[in-house]
Image (cartoon, rainbow, N blue to C red; front, side):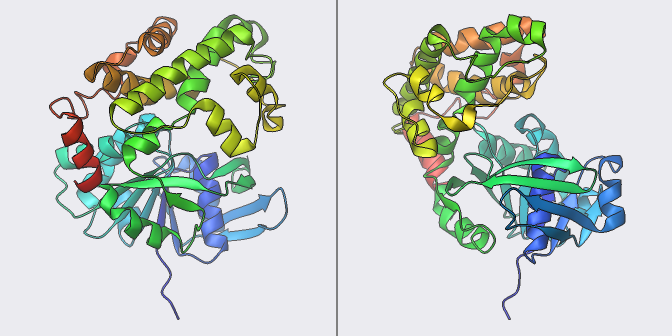
Length: 365
């Protein structure tokens, strides 16, 4: 009988809970870690998570090997470490993991946002980790899910194809072989710059939120985020930001998908303009705006997605005035310096590399 891969899921929010429940239900030995025990006490008491899915094909009790708030205990037997927390917490998770990582372990960020794997690898090294560990990242989260209760999870949809890349890309095939035992949906994402620069949330989330700030605050988000929030003028801003993102990718020799191509690929949405394509995407109907502006669409997507895209653009001579304007608006509204808090190339240790050296780093190490 083939030995089953040991998984550890880090983070017990909507996504982490769904992933742990799913892995447990399909028979993989799985440990669930959360920083605070209060949040996982009911799961620990029951020994797992009750899982429901909208189409009914995934239903049952996802039994877990262990539920813990002790990181050393969580990583002890792990072969694949699935990090399912907001990317703004990646530094804290990497710092906590660094002393306990072992040779041969694989860490996958779900997702990395932009430059997540690069940041995680640097943080564990800076914190004294010498183990031969592979860091990888997914381009987006594989599930659409939510928690129905303290020990329940619901999966609305599992994406059919999710790009994934390891750092360096020469290890991607090995990571895919290992993860395919549980998730055949992951495909080769090229390299971690490609997965990070195909980050569509970076373009959509912050700009739509900021350009609808008055409406969000006056209605507490009681409108359809994409359908009402993307008017012709807002769509023109999104198109400008998207052109900058694609140009930044091009400066590194990467062919990034445009927002229009992404909407066609992900949702088969059609239209002559971005506004038309968004309004022709049935999945966007019913999605409400965030109730407040202190939301991950800003405090996560600005420093962990827009800042690294703009920082790379500035380093390699690409005009990123549109993206920078969105970053600066977020700084003013949140009274914080997202350029200081975010993933700049200086913080990532990439500022000394030219394009060829950066490409070699992400491809070969």
